[in-house]
Structures are given as structure tokens and as C-alpha cells.
Amino acid sequence: MRFIDVSRPGLRMLLICSTGAAMLVLAQIIIEPSVVNIYCSILCAVAGVATTIHCLRRKTVSRFPISSMAVMGFAVTTYALPLLAQTMSWRPLIYNLLVPREVFEATVAFQAVVLAAHIVYTNAPALQAPSRWLARRVLKPIWIFRIPRPVELWALGLLGIGATWVSRIMFGDAVEFGNVGGKFLQALVPFIVAPFFIPLRRYFFDRDIVDPPGTIPMLSGYFTLVLVTALFFNARVIFAVCIFTVLLSILMMAAMGRVRFSRRAKVMIAVGVLVALPIAGVAQDLATAMQAGRLLRGQATPAEIAMETVRAFGDKARLEAMRRDEASMTMESGFSGISEIYLESEFFQRLTYTKYTDLTMAASLRLSDFQQSQIRRDAYEGIISILPTPIINALGLSVDKANRGFSTGDVYANLAFNEDLGGYRTGSSITNTIDVLSVFWPLVVFVICILMFIEFDSYSLMHDGRLLISAISFVLLYEIVARGLVYESFRSLVESASRAYIQAIFVYTILTLGIRLALAPLAGLQGQRNLGHG
Image (tube, rainbow, N blue to C red; front, side, top):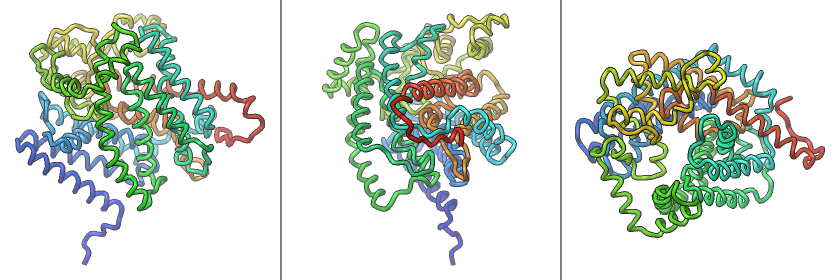
């Protein structure tokens, strides 16, 4: 007799996830059998299974793909990827963490609130109605759901490349407050991923679309251009975002059932993973070499920085020494001396916020009541600074954006370790939200999550029985997954739920409309399926 019907997809997923989580916990027990490591591993495993079961089941992800990916993104960037990556590196989960128990308790509590908000949202038609209204009444009329032509996507990508070069040469890493032109250039940079959407259009729009001949070779050449740009300006995140955006898109489409892998395809993927292992080592060396070039920023030209990166990349002993030096840093020199090293892989490290939560949590535990009030004051001023300067002046608010040239991580370092402001140390929205809102943080985070789910899912539209997922969701997918629900501060969560959504829609609409008008003479009278007026 069969007591459990494992052919049911839900039960099969539960068994797979539970088995995988149990194996990771067992491995962690073997790696370091301390009470704290075992406790934290179990917390992460249980939270990861619950989140995966909810978000990746076909019923949820097929109707709410973008918000589901955002919830999964929170899990991956805060505890799930650390558990997997540390186990693969045969390190304890709590490796190099100052206050691991506090970090994972706060993180899993945050995940519980985020998950509860998504469960309520996906089961409450009244909460889904604003998302459908935005999609149909606001975004559809401005052609957000029109299938973009390849030439338009190429134009967007080249604009992103050009904006990267111009903004890096003119402004470096940071644009001063009030520089509207510089901020606009920075807003164009994410469109660097647009050409990679060409072969994925058929899956996002759920219909047969024929790609132009030579698309894959052209994309290979374009990726080389992206890699050169990243190397020249010592910006690892540029090429990493392209890779992760494509992989996340394929994962989302596979979860929705739009991408199906044959047995042969699965074998090819397995072979590809094996082949990619040595390539991953090369990529990690390149990322470490870029840190050598980063030390010359502000002292050398981009060409000299690129040459220093190349020299470091060819010196294996130097790369190993850099990793050892960074990993051995301690708290002796204050906040700036605390090592940010946590995961062995540079690429995985860029995807996680665990260590930043650890650093800010350790700093927070040292603060007095008065210093905690200063944290709240900074959050208030940061939220006010989201408003346009004319509105701030009209309301008579005493907040000067020009005086906010620092990050939330800087504030914690300044208050706890007397470090100077202006270093732009990465903070943690988990720590900062708890410090700012105290016992009210679960309620406020719940409401903010509902608002963001409404915005995220407005990027998709049900049309003729098919769920259309817009091109802008592809462009923003990395940001939504990696930074949608967790980032640098409580202010960043408020900004994501308010100004960021409006800005993204505005920039995408202006760019695509301008490109269409510029290319109209070349298009002639060829028909173009326009779902914006369908």
C-alpha cells in the first residue's frame, strides 16, 4: 500500500526540499557540531523549505511570478545561499560571523513576516485588484506589454553601455546630490541587460516568436563588450548582473512550466555545470583581481586600473595573499577593520547580505539608548530625502540632501566605533528596520511587502488567457530578486515601495518610446503586434 502519493507535484517538491535541507543540516553538524551552528542551520533549513514550497509551487508562481521571485530572493540572499555555499565549501554556517545567533534569528523572523504577507496577498483578491488595475489601466496604455523588437532591445543595451562609460568617466562611483543628468545616466545603466531578452521573449510573452538569425553569436560578442566594460571600470557587478538576470529568468520560466527540459537537456545542463566549475574558479580570480584595481580608484586612469587588474589576475600568489589578508582582518581597527569576507565565492558573496547584517547587528548591540535615537533620526531624515528637493523646501522640512553623503552602514560605524562618515559601508535593512521601528517592525514590514507585491505583479498582465510578463520585469529582475525586499536600510525599503517603481516605469517608457520613434523610418510599414492596443 502506498501511504503517500509522491506523484503529486506538491508532495514531490516537499520531499525533495526536505531531503535536501536535512542533508545540508547533517553536513553542518559534521562540519561544526556546536550548538549555535546547529541551531542556525536548522532555522535556515526550515525557513528555506517553507519559502520554497510556497513560492515555487505552480499555482503560486504561475499567477504571481515576480512577487514570488522577490520572496525567494529574500531567502536566497539572506540565509539559503549561505547555508548551501558554506556547506559546499565545507565551512560552518557561522564562519566569520560576530553574532550569528542574533543574525539568523532576526533574518528568519523577517522571512516569516515576508512570507506571511505573500500568503495573505496571494489569497486575497482585494489585495490583488490594485495590481491588475495598474497593469491594465496604467501600464498597458503606455505599451509596457508590447513585445519589443530585437533592434529596440539592442538599442537599449547600447544605451546602457554608453551610459556606463559616460557616467563612470564623468562621475566615478558616486553622483552628487542635485545632479539630475548624472542620476539619469545611472538610471540607464540597468538596460545593459536588454539584448539578452531577445531569445527569452517567447517565454515571457508565452507565444511563438522567431529570433533573427545570428542572435546567439551576436549576444556572445555583446557579452564580451560588457566584460571589457566591467574590466575597464573595475565594476564586477556589471557582468555579474547580466549572468544572474538570464539565470533567474530561466528559473522563473521553468517554475512556471514555460521552459521544459528534456532528458537530453538535463544531461547537457549537468555537463555544463561540471564544465563551469573550472570557469567559476577563473571568474573568482578575476573578481579578486578587480579588488587590486579598486585600490587605485581616484589615483589612476581607467586604463591604468584595467592594466593593474590584468597584472593581478596573472599573479596567482598575489591573489591568494589578497584573500588571506582580507579574511584575517579583525575588529582591532574598528568597524572598517572588520572583515566582510563570509562566502568563499566572490560571486555568491555579492548576492548575500548575511555578513552586512552581522556587522550592523554587532554594532547595534553596542549602542546606547541615545545612540539608538540617533539611528531613528537618521532614518527619518533619509526617508524625507526621498522626496524631491522642491517638495522638501515647500513643506519647510529641515533636511538638506547635500549633507547626506554617507550610508546607513557609515552611521552604525560612526556611532559604535567612531569611524568617519562617508565611507559608504553597506548596511542592512534587517538590522536598521528593527532598530528604527522597535516592536512595530513586523506590522510595518508586512504593509510595505504588500505594497511591493502589488507593484511587482503589475509588471505582468493576463491577456487572452495568457499571462504576459513585460520586458521591464526582465531588466529589473536582478534588482527585484537581489534587492527588492532586503537592502541597505529601512529607507531603502520605503524607497523601493514608492519612488523606485515610478522612476523605473518613467525611464523605460521614455526610452522605448524614443527608440521606437527614432527607428520608425527603418521599420517601414511592417506589422508589429502591439498588445498595448490589443
